Length: 147
Image (cartoon, rainbow, N blue to C red):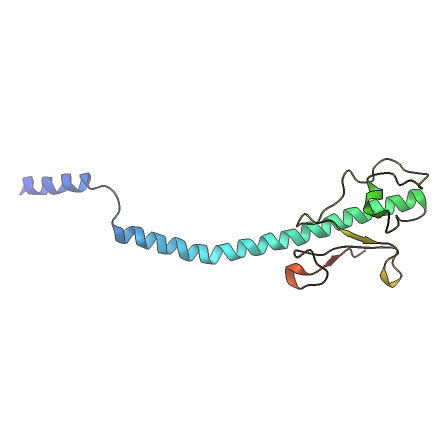
């Protein structure tokens, strides 16, 4: 009996690995976890792009205000945001770049700038959102700088 018991123990030690059922159960569990977690991660990614865009809009608006303090005017629509990086021809006071590079939104698209702005505002500064087109809803909605 000891010999038979000892032989079974040796066989168990030699049998390493998982059965097909065990592997399938693990794969099913991983699939369920992925189905629950992945959508939330992508939702956070979209939300972080909106937040990044809002922060970049605020930073750009601050640079526009510095330009205004130096020149008693905002850049024209034609000068655009490039006036914050490179000196426009008709500007007398320019204290170097107000920004190092032209700003981009969270989707790596250029910001939109119009001066004078709508509703009596000195300028409109906004992003077209994820779809890079005017209008839209959810992630595709336009994101405006709100002072």
